[in-house]
Image (cartoon, helix red, strand yellow):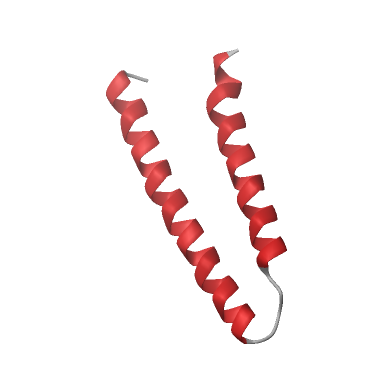
Length: 62
């Protein structure tokens, strides 16, 4: 992959991550209004997403 391909993939990944986080926040707000404590679930999902992203990016550099 060329440098520009990597930049495009990184930009699309960032946009996707923002969309996922926004969706999780919206879902958590809905669950919060419905009386379900979803903060722990959202934080766990967010940490897992970050871990998968880091493994995907830095795992290929070894």
